[in-house]
Length: 117
Image (cartoon, rainbow, N blue to C red; front, side, top):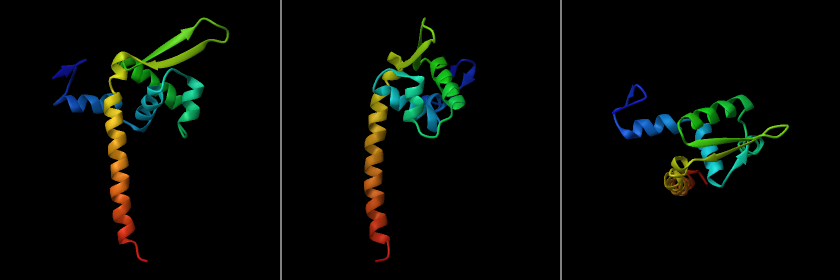
């Protein structure tokens, strides 16, 4: 399969490229709850720099997952939201959330039973 001049061995490889990395997943997670301004995103994702947030938002916008709306005001107001395609990732995020909870429960109970008393 080929897209934008790049060959992919399977669709999962494409998805990984589109949403890979710590920050993209967290940005998408924040936008699942609705439209956000840049400063709101930055505050809700501890540790992300302004430069990195800008870079990741541009990549997500280029991929068609996030849309950027600039309001003609002084100073300009910019809002970010998920596109319909970006919103379609919601089931994947819900599955990841459920799996993460299960993992924490199972690994937590294993760790608790192996700790010395």
